[in-house]
Length: 118
Image 1 (spheres, rainbow, N blue to C red):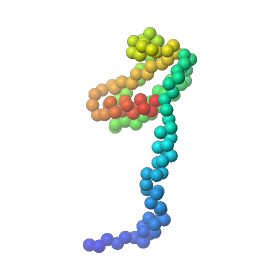
Image 2 (image 1 turned 180 degrees about the horizontal axis):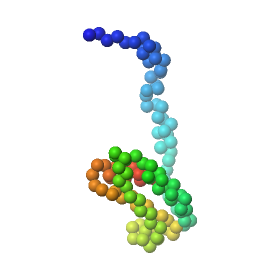
Image 3 (image 1 turned 45 degrees about the vertical axis):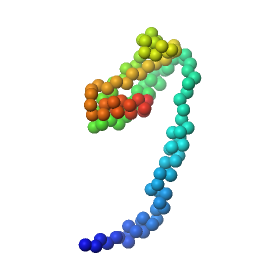
Image 4 (image 1 turned 60 degrees about the horizontal axis):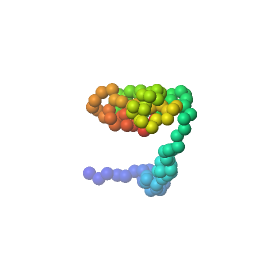
């Protein structure tokens, strides 16, 4: 059985240049990601509560397997507690621990995505 190709489909495909379907459109995104860097200059100015809330909201909004949202965020502000985990912690620092609530079904991956979003 022969299939007929619609003339309308051929015209529509010919109107779109091949670059629309290529990866070159993502060059701006790749350039942005490549230009981002992690600041290594830390201060002892305390992190504000509103900033912590924004960070946590970004983690909460992360997509997860079957929308299971298996993460738990623990915010630690006590410097002595943080020094047990990270010895050179500065005054005013905040530590957010991301942990999974259960095993299996991509919990580790989901927690990693949440951490990246934060």
